[in-house]
Amino acid sequence: MARPGHKYIFVLGGVMSGVGKGIASSSMGLLLQARGYKVNLVKVDPYLNVDAGTMNPTEHGEVFVLKSGLETDQDMGNYERFLNRDLGPEDYMTSGMVYQTVIARERALEYGGATIEAIPHVRDEILRRIEAAANEAESQISVIEIGGTVGDFQNALFIEAARLLRLQFPDDVAFVMVSYLPVPGTLGEMKTKPTQSAVRELNSYGVQPDFIVARSTHAMDEKRKEKLAIACSVRPDRIISAPDVESIYDVPLNFERDSISDLLLDKLRLPKDTPASLDDWRTFVQKMKADRPKVKIGIVGKYFDTGDYVLSDAYLSIIEALKFSGAEIGVKPEIIWLNAKEYERGAAIEGLSEYDGILVPGGFGESGIEGKLKAIQYARENKIPYFGICYGMQLMVVEYARNVLGLADAHTTEINPDTANPIVAIMDAQKKHMAEKNYGGTMRLGTYVEMVKPGTIAHEAYGSDSVEERHRHRYEINPAYVQQMEEAGMVFSGTSPDGVLMEIAELPREAHPFMLGTQAHPELQARPLDPHPLFTKFLEASLIRAQER
Ligand code: GLN
Image (cartoon, rainbow, N blue to C red; front, side):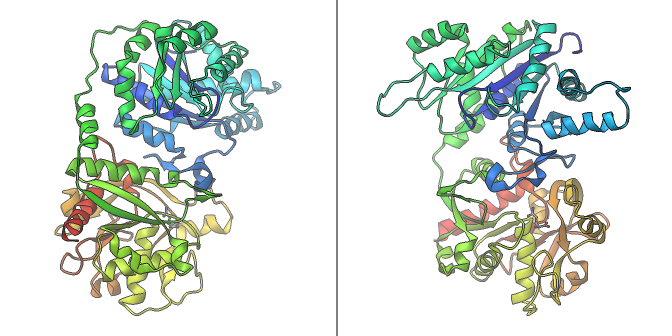
């Protein structure tokens, strides 16, 4: 089934979820790429959603949109950031996608009347997709992360597919288990037993791991390595200690200290002639560690409260984008989460004066809207650098219409469909989908070209007349109001090539040090080795305010 000589590394989770399979996969991908191999990374999400688009960000974290427009898991963002390249829609699969294909083929009588079963039909569709991703990327090595934890019902078929591949091509397939080793406070000792059980569980699927990545709060000592090696039949040098680190970007360098790329290449019988070229990555990591002046950035959002916990996962790419631009220009963004709903419950908006920059990220629906509008008004009136992303751009325009143009009821029709001043509205093409309740796929998704107006802040940032950015939204700035807004001082510095859609709004420098919103999601294209210029400009303006304060 596989192309001859193609190599596969399957990454599986043991003990519990959330221990860093995604970062381990990204790091292995980066290291093998740094050794001169063409690598593709595949994420398998075992849930039945056909894509991540319909999932609540407070539950599942950010929806990461690929260039193609596919809505995926946030791990895909880490993959792109580590590999420093765009991934394709083939590089992502969910159980929902796999079943949808199989069922559609069954309905179309493509199986010629056979009984359709999990084995072989679903398994083979999984293998077909893995193969298609490798072919599309023309890669030599595929790193495939299977979501969830070994022992979950949902991922069993994916593991079964991987087992079959190994059976057919024993020298071309490696298994890496990323497991968690607790150090219970009462004992103060690292315990290997849960990982031993997880490996045994994996063995019951007929799979023996070749590597164990030992995630823990602490580094693993030799004694425990020996113990785990014997208990799990894994060579001790193939047990990679992976203690918590300050920054995920340290992980590849730490892995390499344990020679993981050599070990993987040995296991896969691939030549090790080219040493890893990691200079750029090292330089980036050093910049991240350097002492830098702080800028205080308030992110006014709403997807953080889950029970008693505050989760910033919904805004992951924004956080990373700020870090990359910060490293580039030598400032350290200190991010503070401000819940927009608090400003509606009466929290003093003047508190924002303590910030060097305010960012309103993307979002959907009504909750927190008036709070965000208050924050935007405060940033505008008090000349605090402001960066609006998607909803944050739409609301920046609504705020301007209300408080500068004097259109008191100006709104987005997402919230007030009956407003007399629909500043942000749905475009006709999308209306049809919505009327049919066809929500999956009703958004403008993926990469679009935009034209950037010379002489604007956006143009200064991009240094180009045309750029590509990724989108995820239903609503647009209503073209009927553009002239009026411009006469009142707002500049639409980015538009679609036909000039109909407003992609970037800004205030001129004379009016405000930095007030800019973009309809796109620039955070999705920010990379450690290629920071995004709009984030960089925002931080530069924030640094000036920090120095003045
Ligand atoms: N809710 C807005 C829209 O659908 C903005 C979406 C977003 O911020 N991603 O257009």
